Image (cartoon, rainbow, N blue to C red):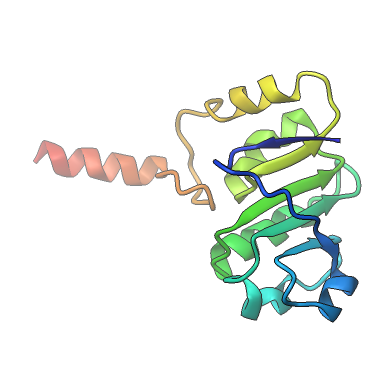
Amino acid sequence: MVLFTEAATPSILIALPYADWRQRPQWPAVALANTDPVEELAPYVGELRLIALHFPKFSDGRAYSQARLLRGRLGYEGELRATGNVLQDQLPFMLRCGFDSFESEQKGFGEALAKARTLFSVVYQPAEDGRATAALLRRTQDRAAL
């Protein structure tokens, strides 16, 4: 598996599976299956340096929801890694949900990641990547014109 990252310094930690991590919650890295309860990490998000979310197959989007909960509702700011069946064509959506590192063996994945960062010049829905929406940009332009 090859690690691709948006982070300035990617974590070299080994993420413990959630069941094992529960026995050692002081460990700074956890790996969640898409059925594990994200909300139970709330008291620990400030100490965790790496959370790995697993995509068991490309059509299972529960890890997207987990990422949005971690970044948006729980305020997680550490490294968020996508593992498992991570496909190049899903990268723009993973970036929008807050993933900043990816494990993949796909040929050309690094180039696809670079392209995914600039694929959409305007976004319509708010997400966890912090990009301003088209509506916000429009309001800002309207105010500046006054």
